[in-house]
Amino acid sequence: MKRLLWLAICLAAACSNPAPASAPSTFCQDGQAVCKGNAVATCKAGTSYDITPCGESKYCTGGACKAVMCEKGKLSCEDKKLLACPEDGSADPSVQQSCPVKCMAGVCVGNCKDGDTMCGWKSLLMCNNGSWSPQPCGPYQICDAKQKKCVDRACTPTEQKCTTASARQVCSVTGDKWLPASCAAGEGCFDGVCRTLVKGGEKPDPRIIPTTTGGDSSGGDAKVNLDAKGFIDIGKKEIILEQNDICKVTLSETATPPAGTEAISFDFSSATYNSVSKMLQITGNFNLNKLEIQIAPIEEFQTGVFTAQGGEAADAKVLFNDGTNDPSKTQWKFQHTDFTIDLTAFDDKDGRIQGTFSAEMVDAEDKTKKLFLLDGSFDIKRSN
Image (cartoon, rainbow, N blue to C red; front, side, top):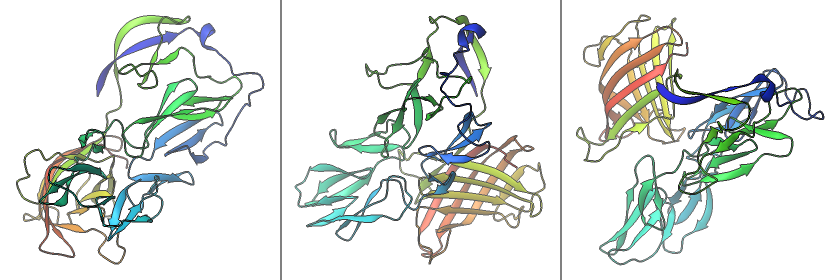
């Protein structure tokens, strides 16, 4: 991916900016991993952190990202009971209240008249013929209670970012807004988390100022103040950044999706190759939706088209789970009956795994229920 960035060069004398004399020389043990919000912070030489966000489908605990038990913060129903998932998704949903009349789409509802609307959990409820009917919002949308309609969310839930040298923002669990958070005295904001300033180390630079969006001085990304002393503006320079991983697919209950159906993009995706079993494995997570593509046996660097009927890779599988979390049942709720995978790039470690796919799936518990994965594509950095 290529982007045009403003590049500023800091003069050494002006940018030494040491931490106060009372600051510690180190604040963590090299290699130690801790949780900083919803991200793993791994200590580097005692003076800084490498940050790995856990994303929507995982939560941070004990210095590691772990799969959520339920969708973070989700409100749901069980008969007349209103259930809520913890905001970090670390436990099963718990009962919040008992609805007097009925619970639907994560909200207590009563009687209604035609034309009434209200918001449920990521869905719009509409009254038709005297009863409520939920219409789910898109995968990256929420229901706005004031506008009473589905709107694009403002940010990715639990995402973290710095806005100034000592302040940051965290995206709300619903993704409707950024929430402000300040660092404690003696701390600075780096990569969205607060950490201790160390003696002789780099300090957050006050020349990093937040941009504004729509007149809100608390929002927006940070930028460099090129007018500050110690910076030389050398103009625009093209810098090649590491390519983002992409794994997306359109889900449909029919072979032809309804108009307006949007593809979902998986927050966490990975591509690995096991040389012993000769299996290329591609995985993705979005909320509680999980996708896994297995191509085996396959030789390293081999590309081509693989189909269920052709048997080019006899042990190939396409597996999908829509969030069902019942240990007594099959782990992968949907399993392929047919698929086509076109693998166009199979590079060495740290290279790219690229291709497209489609599949017809069947519910492992209810064979009459189908799911179609359409127009799928992946472009992922190979980890091993």
